Length: 220
Image (cartoon, rainbow, N blue to C red):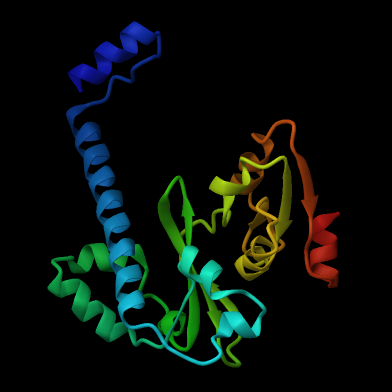
């Protein structure tokens, strides 16, 4: 705390005077977020180790190469949440962390699904689950996690940004060397996502949503 206060004074940034209780709460929240991030990374490793092998793969049936799938860690799996929970407990994660992460909230998330980690700033913020069968809805995300913007970190280095609904749309475009493609996880763009796009100065931004009435309305 002392070091942060000194840095704030040198840079002219106001430093909030928090009580010991408030500082303790902030530290606890920061530790919880760190643990949840670690848990998401472990869950991704579990999926990789128990991936569902099919020939051709789901990505190939969508015209997306294996190389792109590997690069963006898009993995097919068929796992039950009890088995994932057991592994997490074995690795030392508490019930509090597991439950607060909501990673096991919906049993459908990892059942016969393609899992794509959504990363921003190099960190996993959620998982996108695309069903491999007839589940409705076709796409699921972690409960109470922001959807983020898939491929934002790479796309923001490009001059042209193409906003799509699905991470699969992004993978298909990247496979054709269109590196500025991003996904908002649906046609309803959140205020947080809009804020991210507003920071992209001097960029050409195109919205490329599916042709249906809801998304056409959202694009307008």
